[in-house]
Structure formats: structure tokens, C-alpha cells
Length: 81
Image (cartoon, helix red, strand yellow):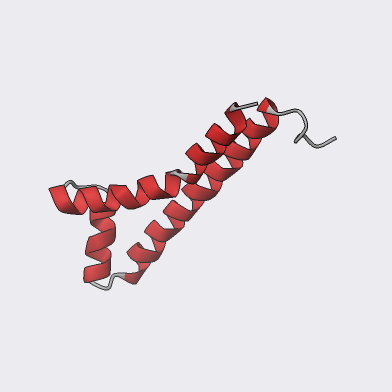
């Protein structure tokens, strides 16, 4: 009974992790998607900017979907009949 809320909060925290990734990469000068995102914003490179937003959006939607599947598996009252 206690596991579905933990899974829900974990799934909701994923976008925060992505935002933190951008902040960490900028602060410590790591090269990754966060660094590329910042560089695209500063140089007004719209295709790269939109592509990274798309990638982040797909990741967030996929994680939310997987979280819903896990919750459905853990709690039989939520499953579709």
C-alpha cells in the first residue's frame, strides 16, 4: 500500500533532475545536453533549442508513462478491466 505514492513522487521528480542537470553542467562546465541547450539559447540556434526541448519532453512523457504502468502493476485496483 505504501509503494505507489513513492513511485509517483519518484516519477514527478524526474523533470527536476533534468533541470538540475542543466544547472550542474553550466556551473561546472561539463559538456552535455544542458551545456548544448545553454549554448543554443545564447547563440539563438532555434533548431537545436527546439530539438533539445523535444528530447526532454519525450523523456518526461516516457517516464510518466512508465510510472503509470508500474503503479498499475503494484496496485490492482487501478488496472483497466
